[in-house]
Image (cartoon, rainbow, N blue to C red; front, top):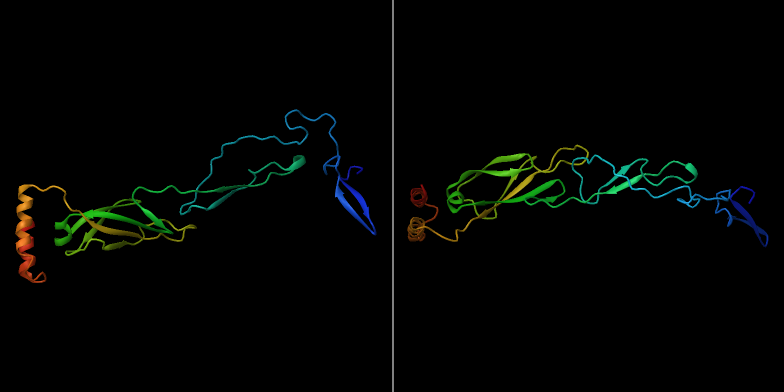
Length: 203
């Protein structure tokens, strides 16, 4: 190939250029190749990199690290490294895009009479007001308490679902109070007298 890395072949009226089978397109033949790279000019090497993860990435997001890919042939520039991310699941929150979802347990008294409780967010504990008469499964929205959007475009919301706690065991006093409540359950639940009785029972 005379150092060109390609050889010319005649096929009928056409001439075709092909990679030289002797030098494998390099344009030169190494007579005494290196024992490590066997004349390839490159060897495998492990390297640990520290990369910055932007806020708001999701599973499947790719980060490009310039110049940390395979070394180029014949001393050429190295390629780029692409890192595919996998976000571990959280023990409290479920994620959908920039929004987060969680559940918070409340007692019957808190749901019936209303209460101020604290719920966990990414930034710590946050106050949440539970209105009187809240039903299990009711979802409350805490604005801008979700994940940061990729690229710094604000934050998502946190949606908190209320779950009612049913006690497995009762003290004698608790059982007595619930029996008193059961006696008045046939009355008008919307009447002021019923609500007042419930408040008196649970304090």
